[in-house]
Length: 263
Ligand code: 13P
Image (tube, rainbow, N blue to C red; front, side):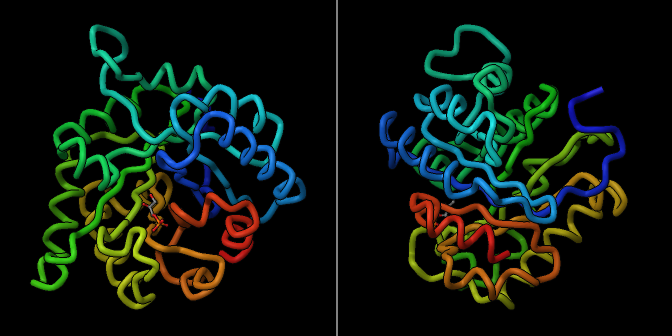
């Protein structure tokens, strides 16, 4: 049996900080220390808070957060366990480094590394096979898709490509992060009504693919794109809103704490 208890109830809200390539080793360690202090008394309704520093800082940050309220995540992973794959890192290696979460298929990787949904699918599969690591699968439409009314199609297609044909057992979990590409780093988050709509579409598609019971138990849908301490409240009580994937605002301990308190 995996590290997650069999048949466990749906987890609490999850807030994940994606530090992208914005902090080096020493800076990541310093920020992690600041966060650990800030979150010392944070213990709310089973909320989970994770931070995802750059790969080279994982083991150092793991030492810092190990006994704290914070979990560790990575920003990328490869789909093989071991072998001649220069520059890549496997799920087991991330687990050994202390990671519990891994972001897969972020739109920046799709844009700059040409990561496609076939790769993303393989990554999700391999991560699910490795016990103890939860995939955070990113989907989201471009501005052009939104303007031309293709958003629903794009989201369904991305979900199907990433997750179609995957079996999920009671002990496994998947987080789907809805990140409209146009909202990332723009300073303008999506309208709450639009987020509600998109999350509903995602939820219905997942219900269709995996069955309602499995989705209720094993899936969480989180939102990412210009979330701040200020706008977090407008998202916190939306239907099918299980948390956030936060970029810029997760680089400031005070701001990130506000977001985590706010949802
Ligand atoms: P921002 O919160 O900076 O818009 O970034 C969102 C994101 O890309 C998280 O993965």
